[in-house]
Amino acid sequence: MDEPIPSQETETPPAANEDAQQFSKWMAEYGRPALIGLAVAVMVMLGISIWRNQKESKAAEAVQALFQGRSPEEFQQLASTDPEAVTAPMALATAAAEFYAQNRYDEALAAYQRFLSLYPGHMLAPDAAVGVAASLEAQEDFTSAAEAYEAFAAANAASPLRPQAVMGAARCREQLGDFDEARALYEDFIAAHPDSTWLPQAESGLLFLKKAERAKAMPAPAPEVVFEATPDMMETVAAAPAGDAEEAVAPAAAEAAVAEKKAAQEDSEPKKKKSAKKKAAEKPVADGGAAGEPAAE
Image (tube, rainbow, N blue to C red; front, side):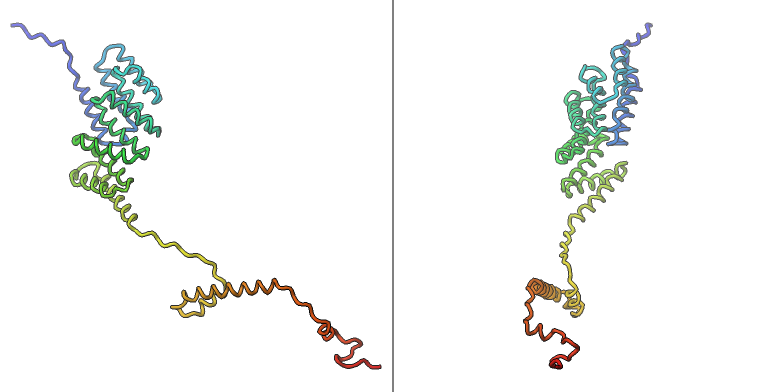
C-alpha cells in the first residue's frame, strides 16, 4: 500500500502565532505606554516572525532595513517606498509611535490615520485606532479624543485595548467638564470588571473626579476690602464697644479725612503781617528800663 505523499504546502509555524498572542497580551497589560514603545515591540515580535516565514532575499533585506531605521522620518519613508511590502505596516506603525514619543502629536496622528486607511485589517489596526485617540488627547482636542475612545470601546468589546479606551474617554470627559459622563464610565467599568488589572486606575480616576466635582461646587471666596487705617481711625475703633467697632470705622475714616483737609488748607494760607503797634509793644526796652516806664533824664 502506497504511503501518502506529504503535502508540499508549508503551514504557518506555531511560533509565529505565539509571537502574535504574546504581543497582544503585552499591549493589553501595559496599555498606553505601549504606544510609545511600539517601535521596539513591533520590530522584535513581528520582525522575528518574518525572518522565520520569509526566505526570499527581498523580504530579508526589507526587514534588515527596518531594523536599521533610526528616525520616524526614515520609518515613514520605508513605508511609503513600497506600501505593499510585508514590512510596510510595521514601518508606518513604528513611525507613528516614534512621532508620539517625541511629542510630535500632529505627525503621529497623521501616521496613525494613514495606517488605518491603508491597513484596516492588520493586527496592529486596533493599536493605531487607540493611537489616533491618544494623539488627539495629547493635542487637547478632548471632544474628538473622547469620541474616538468611545467609538473604539463600543466597537471592540472583547479587545484587550478596550480598558485603555474607556479610561481615555473618562479622562477627556472630565477635562470637558462632563462629570456625569466621566463618572458613569468609571463606575460601569469598576462594576463590570472587578478583577481587571485596570481596576486601580479606574478607582483612582473616580477619586480624582469626585475631588474635581467638589472643588467646582464650592462657592468662590468673597473679595477682601483693603484700606489704610489712620491713627485716629484706630483710636476710634479701639474706644468703640465690641459690637460697634465695624460701624465706627466709616465715621472715623470720614472724620480723619476732614481733619487732614483742614490742616492742609491752614498750611497753604499766607501768614498775616504783624502791625507796627504790636511790634513796638513786643520790642525790648533799652538801657535796662522796665517796660512802660519813661527813660530817666
